[in-house]
Amino acid sequence: MQDIKSLSLLELEECLKAFGAKSYYAKQIFSWIYKKSVLDFDQMSDLPQELRNKLKENFYITSLKIVKCLRSSDGTKKFLFELKDGNSIEAVVIPSERRVTGCVSTQVGCKGGCSFCASALSGFIRNLTFSEIIDEALYLKKESLPAKLTNLVFMGTGEPLDNYDEVIKAVRIINSPDGLNIGARKITISTSGIIPGIQKLAREGLQIELSVSLHAADDELRSKLMPINIKYPLKDLISDCKDYSIKTNRQITFEYILIKGLNSSLEDARGLVNLLKGWNLSKVNLIPSNSIDELKIEPPDFRDIMSFKNYLVKNGIMVTLRKERGKDINAACGQLRLNYEKK
Image (cartoon, rainbow, N blue to C red; front, side, top):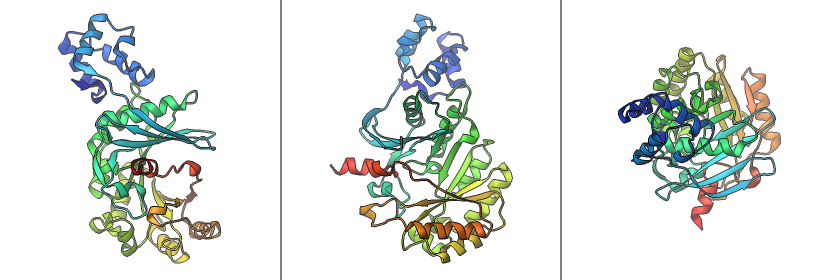
């Protein structure tokens, strides 16, 4: 037996044909699961009983087991889920005035080993399946009610482009009118800079947003912060990001976590200007770091953050400063799972 959510609409239509059922029932099944959040075949009342019995004989519908939910005073909610094999993952829903953003994980743990990330402390265990990623999105959709889940970002634990095939399958269901029906330009994949994945993504024909974790403007510092830079250095990464922009006509966002005493000086800002100046299809999202005791990191003072931002703006770099959300519940990637597993 397999999870029915592991099938695309076309694959489900083919399965139904093999059962001797009409293929159009596939859209009704999709509607029950992705639009109505019904995960029980017996409740799919507009399907013939014979088909429901056949579905139960051949498929199951997974759902995540909620282990813990933390609610922030700003409305952010962070969830710790237990998977079927006992591993745990995190997801976050972030409401604001004009949108509700869901943030999902793509791996249990992470191979990246970034020195500022709590996810790296537990190491890498495995990739999430397509249906497990969809389970996260479905849960966040339900938790967003009565508001609508409008945006989805692949910025939770793990490197999405290291789990490429499963992530792209999930993106297509999330974007599909028969699935979660979230617009392509409201879906963001974040990567630490896996160049082959960026090249492949440029050929998918998807109008999704790409976000690249940068965090330093020179190879020496970036390699210390992010070991992936040793394999895919900045010169090659920036070149391929520019190619991506040309092929897709999409702006790339460079995430830059500001860490006190490490990458937040005006000299660091000058390096960032030199790296990106003159590139119209790029912007920088500045993110004050979370305080993580285990990693001995903390954010810069507010004055230093604003000096860094203002220098970029003055030199023609498009900049946003991420508003802190969920600070009182440790909403940074990996922190909830790390605290849970330490007990």
